[in-house]
Amino acid sequence: MVEDAAAHEEEDRKRREQVEARNKADQLAYGVEKALEEVKDKLPAEKVADVEGKVKSLRDAIEANDTAAMATQSEVLEAAMKEIAEAAYSSAAADATNGAPGGQAPGGSEEPGKGDDDVIDAEFEEGE
Image 1 (cartoon, rainbow, N blue to C red):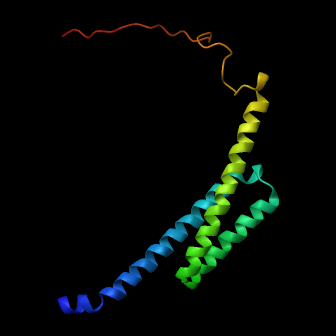
Image 2: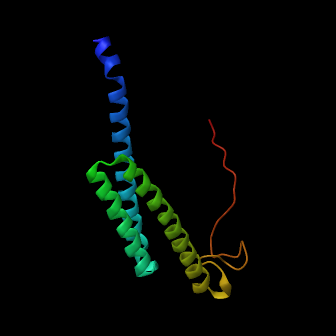
Image 3: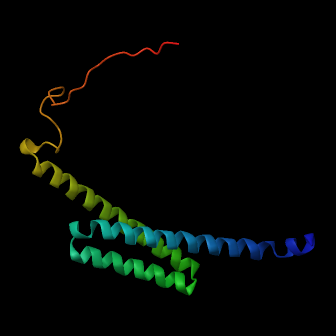
């Protein structure tokens, strides 16, 4: 039994690497699809179509069980997602500053401590 394990050790290692690469690629594709749905309306249509095409390429590599293609497509898709995240965050920040008076983020008061809160600062001691 130990001899069998030693004889198949290399096969097992390769198979494990293939499964891990496939799982990682599948998780990446799922995460990108989900993130893209959330920010689709804030991005240009050609950028969305480009990323969707890259996701499809990664899904095709997963179906073909091509580990090298999965790695390559994963790197390409990760780079595209970084660009999308930057674009989405910059447009969200621009929306936040443009929507509030004076270029201030919404919800911020002009002077700290001047809110309409009825907060009372007190100390509390529990008796035994």
